[in-house]
Image 1 (cartoon, helix red, strand yellow):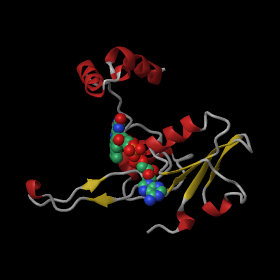
Image 2: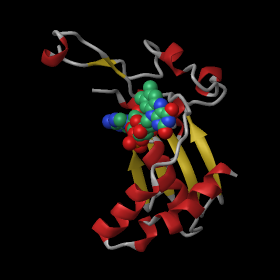
Image 3: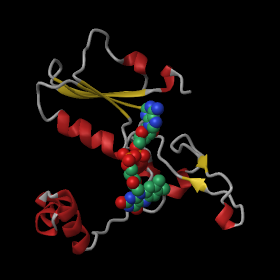
Amino acid sequence: MLGIRRLLSWLAASAVLGQAALYDNIKQLPSGLSFDFIIVGGGTAGSVLANRLSENPQHNVLLIDAGPSNADVLLTMVPGYNWRLRHTQYYWNYTTIPQKGLNGRVFNYDRGHVLGGSSSVNAMFYTRGASSDYDRWANVTGDDGWSWSVSSHTCSRWRS
Ligand SMILES: Cc1cc2nc3c(=O)[nH]c(=O)nc-3n(C[C@H](O)[C@H](O)[C@H](O)COP(=O)(O)OP(=O)(O)OC[C@H]3O[C@@H](n4cnc5c(N)ncnc54)[C@H](O)[C@@H]3O)c2cc1C
């Protein structure tokens, strides 16, 4: 169990303060604040969620991560250098159980333990899927938003 003192808290947006703030320790969080949303896990999904929710100035959003801040951590910014962060505080440093199908070998099971989560320790490779995959998701979900013709515009926005 992680002690509460190790929690890193990010006040993503506050209608009261009208701004975002980053705290390295939960004890630094000003008292008397209340939040409409508390998101546990400031990784890829949690950070996007906090960002989208905080677009509404009426929402006070608190994003909490178990790991430290990624600010000014050079190796989280260099594509392909993520492996040098293994065995540091920025990784959960999990290993698998011995893998029967792989002659009993044990492997690193990499996950980011840092604000930004695994996106802070990933290799930063980027590729688009096959258009047929997106169209299949649109068919399966019945939501045309997944189709290649719609989602390829979103991909273009990511690149710019
Ligand atoms: C080494 C590595 C290389 C990768 N390379 C690429 C790449 O090149 N290109 C690519 O597109 N994808 C890559 N990926 C995949 C991509 O980074 C992940 O799929 C994505 O970041 C997962 O997002 P997530 O939100 O599901 O989880 P995460 O981003 O892992 O977020 C989970 C967050 O929750 C926090 N957390 C967990 N438990 C608690 C708790 N109890 N309390 C508080 N916080 C908690 C963690 O600290 C973490 O910050 C890579 C992944 C890894 C691990």
